Picture 1 (spheres, rainbow, N blue to C red):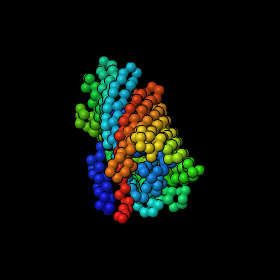
Picture 2 (cartoon, rainbow, N blue to C red):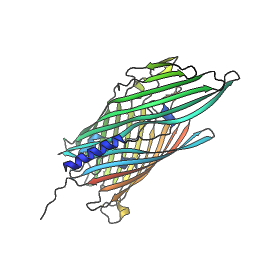
Picture 3 (cartoon, rainbow, N blue to C red):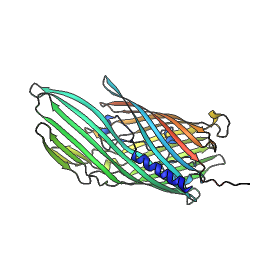
Picture 4 (spheres, rainbow, N blue to C red):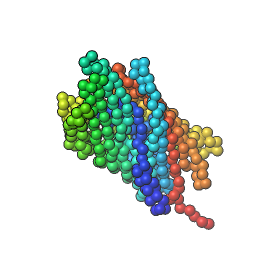
Length: 421
């Protein structure tokens, strides 16, 4: 049994070394830390990412570490996900499509002690990926200036967490993450009359921790119904990263380097959710989340100086709701045992563009969870989720993205005690 646990940790370690971060082709990833990633796993994604109050023993739920204490005492859960995305980017009458695929996450969970669950894994935090150019005609003297924008990278987090049910209705938990990655952005401007060729290269490398706490209160209403309340808090702190900007004239090979000591910071994050479950067949949940980005400064190049400035980022708010329905978990008919999931969400931006608010996000999702029968049980699950996300703001680009996520939840009875008669 110990060998199996060690093997799971090794699998997670190998996943870290070969991890391809969640891809994006969004021009909006050039702002802030990039496009903030979806932290939810396969079961949550069909419900559009809700899970703060989700508390079930047959699946992992990293959105609230207090849920780990509900993990079944005889099983080992391992959840992995892949995603592919098609994005349509539109500006006025011009439109272009972009495609990408990525390995999303890998998470393991098991009962460590009585009333204590343990979870480990790797999930994305943010993603940066774009490459586009635009031209501007100045005059006969200066000609046409072409500006090329490129960016890549993002942040990931490897974490361990534990949840403890120390009272019958109350559970608490934490996630301790190692946050790492790099963000690289380049802006190159060149003139047709060779008046100047200027390149600005922004880079930052992060190696720091991230700490989140969670709480869940589960209240039985009747023999068939219960309600769960969930709350999480993520600590905000400086990341010890030193953002760097190199401004170079490629025609003369002259360059200037700017560095801001300890210039990046995580915001405080607050979230709460409520879920109602009926007969273990119907689950309905709603979540709200706030990230205090507005109280953090961010590096900006202005007036030939690279410095921290307030008002670049703004507080971000999210509202999500989702439902899952399983007709009859004990039925011999496969369609009656399938988990049917739907969800919707709305989120405000966490950054400003030229002084105005960035784009808002509207999303809807639908998915299925198919039970997999093997020689031991039918507790493992194949989840398929489709999600549509529209990112738009007046006078800015409009992006419509369709993402398909395939998740595999292995749920095996590693810790079951067998009796021979």
